[in-house]
Image 1 (cartoon, rainbow, N blue to C red):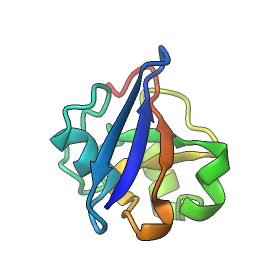
Image 2: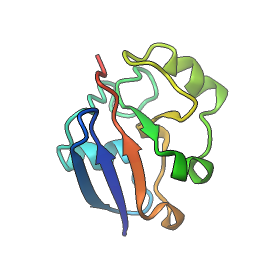
Image 3: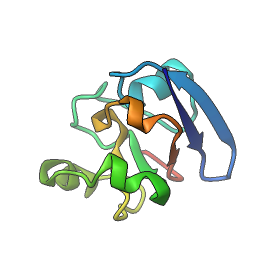
Length: 107
């Protein structure tokens, strides 16, 4: 198990226990975390699961590959250096305690 903390744009925090191997997007949807639309269901086709990886975790998660960066250009909220599509972050034991921030809007 790993834990993820989701922080909404207004500062509300939700911490969720998750299974190694799941995507951050799936964990958020299963736990009804507000702010993750995930319209394409994790196919890297819509940018509605956009998150900002907390800077303390960014080196472990890593930057978005080029094709993911291309999709992030279509995100409703500003893409930043720490932007990722949560459907593309797969949980591993070394991501236990991961913190992600949700943008103001996904659509």
